[in-house]
Length: 464
Image 1 (tube, rainbow, N blue to C red):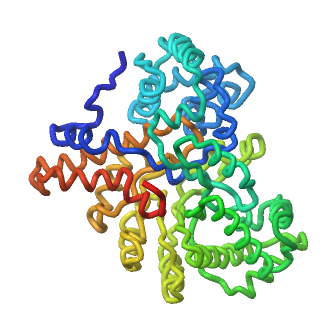
Image 2 (image 1 turned 180 degrees about the vertical axis):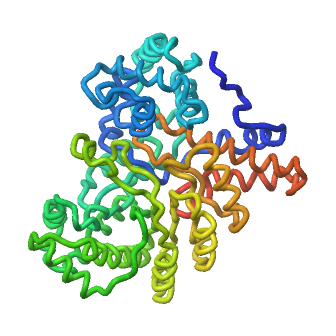
Image 3 (image 1 turned 90 degrees about the vertical axis):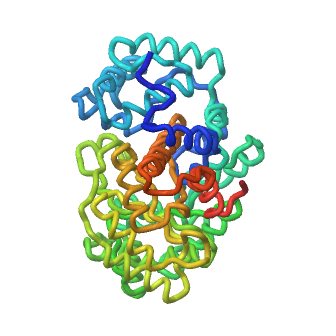
């Protein structure tokens, strides 16, 4: 038997009552993830636990590299079973790492396997889970339904195919799968394949040889996204840049369009302007913005060349762009064009700076118009979530918080919502038992239900 108990992470009676009465059975709205929508549409049964658990999950890959596991057992040519056993071996001593908790919860919730994950049990876990998969016809749709998921927002580039989402809707799975609009490949103008990306956008719209044509093409694609239900967008930058002049951005864009190399300063000029343009566009169309800041990407050039993007070689940036963020929000707000925005911060030393800044731009457009996003990526662990809640409650208002997400490519990531819910209930339960807040559990419970589900449903204008 594993160390997991029913009161996992719940350290007092009030926390246990809050979790079991108000949080445990709430539906899930995963408003930011990287699940491949075609996999959901095809709904093919999985062959083994590796395919569900380890394939494409760079969280797990990173942990294995930290242990010194050969890349052949991570992304290389080793068999699925060999890779699975290597991961179990690593996890057995990863005390304090969130994967140590998440993986154990995933085995229990999805496969009914309660063996403790370690080297000694690895082969038995492999056999037990694979037997369950074969006996129960485990598919992507089954995993999503079993997790009580109501809505999923995938993350899609501007030129991605919308027909997949239309086909998913026709399946009537009982949950929605909707794309969030993301223009990263258009924003990152210095990337080697940039002209290829522009060509893909042009194939769906029109020739984009200047900034005016590019803006019109982006709006046309946003409208196409809205036709399949999109209410959210995503912008990911290491740091927020100044809002540069449109004419300067146009000059840079034309230079890139002609195939000329750009300086760092030129690329930043274009990115700074396009961030402003996109947020203004989102406000025009009633689209919520998810602004991710603080990730320093692709640190290892050798591994980038070998494996490509999003394979576990990003880290936390120390860039401080709070003044530029202030000027961006203020310019948009002055033009009545600041969309409801969730700021996801990856550097915890910036929590209070961002929290107090977004408080300067609230309005009655929607409760908690400017949101401090949940602890994500390197921070979606117990320590990170607890610090997030402390900073959120100290300088914001928890009752409007839109709650947790997975930010994951894995269909087994939904227990992360329950992980957060336990930490949330323990945080509030502890304050209650210390006499630092009301003991009206009905009132507190309503706040918990809203944070777990209803706030995000209302924020993104979805059906309950």
